[in-house]
Amino acid sequence: MSFGVKIMYYCSRAIIIKTMDLRETDKLVTLFSEKEGKIKAVAKGVKKPASSLRACVQPFCHSLLFFSSGRELDLITQGKLLDFYSNIREHIDLILYSVYIMELLDKNLMERVSLPGLYVDVLSVLEYINDIGYNPLAIRFLEMNLLKNLGYQPVLDECVFCGRKGGLLRNFSIEAGGTVCDMCVKCTAKNFPLSGELLALIRLLGSKNLKTVSRVKATDATLQQLEIFLEKYLEYHLERKFSVKNMISKLKHNRLRIT
Amino acid sequence: MRLALPLEKLIDQLLKLPGIGPKTAQRLALYILKMPLEEAGQLAQAIIRARKEVFPCSNCGYLTDTDPCRICQDQSRDRAVLCIVEESSDIIAVERTGYQGRYFVLNKDFNLMEDNDLEALQLKPLIKKLESGEIEEIILALNPDIDGEIISRFLADMAVKYGVKATRLAYGIPVGGDIEFTDEITLRKALEGRKEL
Image (cartoon, rainbow over all chains, first blue to last red; front, side, top):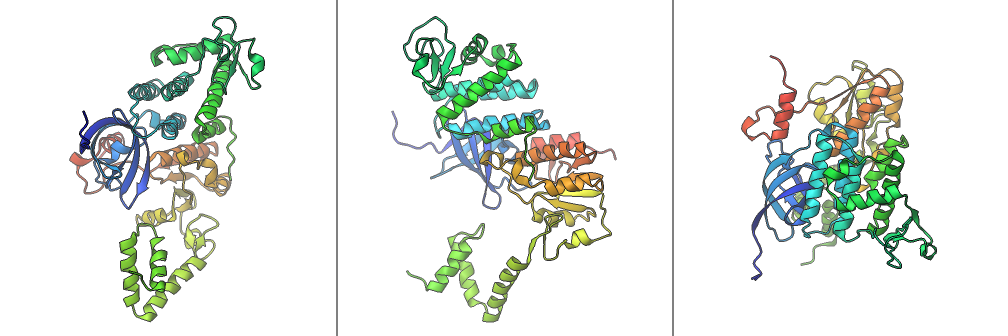
């Protein structure tokens, strides 16, 4: 039973999403905490060289943070760095993929909605990238699990229009959010064609853990199709464009326009 | 209570400055009112003059009243070393160290998550410098945060393509600092970059 008493002090493990300058030496930190979900909190004095909090509030660090509740924003009072992911910070592509993960969290999570399952998934992906390196399936795994946690998991085992199970499901309706059977394919104008390999891979992403997913061997063409599919699906359902993803693509294909 | 209209306007203008809240703006406005008219006029003139006459140097981006700036004109400086900084204020800090090379200011707020990507950095003048073959080393003196790291890695890759050596500022414990209270990342980086005595 709640007596309407606000908790004054609390602690939680958290992944730092981003920081913004606030006043002379303070920073406004957006973080994804294990217990409270996405929150914004003030870290006082972190721009001073002697600040002990500074290391704990760097983007995509994993830290144990202590908070005191404020009227509008909570205050980070103490912190302990759990992981800095130093290998990621050595390579521009790994940094960019990690920033993309943070962008996904920043733009899509609601404040104060706890998502412990997604928290574990984000940690596992960061650890994987740090220890093993870049694997496109790790990023796709996170995108799919984000959709799942936000309630946008695609329907993959039956036709999203008629509910028919079995048979060939060779198309996907991004708008309706599911696979379409050959009978209903005329119902929608925009369909995404699915190969058997691609459909199996999408099903796997939403049902298995990262360890299993990362071991899957898929052709480059299928991986590219999967990336395009999830990009379209994310953009349509979350109604967002992801700038970091766009920049990664420009860098990868040497399309950066130098001004 | 309503203030006199000119005073209210002055407070409104001061409020636009960074780090100035309503109370500070009011205190500054009242101080200006107490100043002799001549001094207040000098302050106003200095603001207008600086705003009109100071502009970024066409060569390096540093704030100047002559083009090229005095640093670029100085023939005694090492033309083979180029220090890349984010803001003109960073040049003031680096100049205090006695550095004798030249500079390039990026002059742009880069924030990847806020839709400002690398295309906004205006790097063409820098590429021209790298192409000229005059530069032997670029020193990346950018803030050691994630955005600074991305720009540094990107510029370092770019410099290598032109056969130019890219270096960055070292991480370490500040002079007079206390090891006990140094954060673990700085200490780890300081250990990695330790020097033989």
